Figure (cartoon, rainbow, N blue to C red):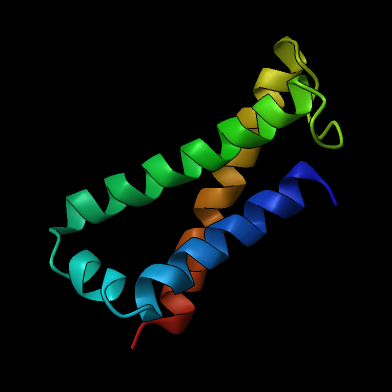
Length: 94
């Protein structure tokens, strides 16, 4: 699996998680729109950084390289995660 694939899956899973899991759904729906976006973007940034860190520490398959090129790859992964997250939200909101 690629870093892009992981990011797409993570974005969709987070959207579904906060949209359907009791407790989390209620808490998330109680937030203002701006804070909802910030929470999702922050969590997706953590996912992107985790992919980068695991690749650099050679804990997982090297999804991105540990250099400037890898950093820009990480930025691409982050944007893909945001797109997947918002797409899943729009398709599954009730």
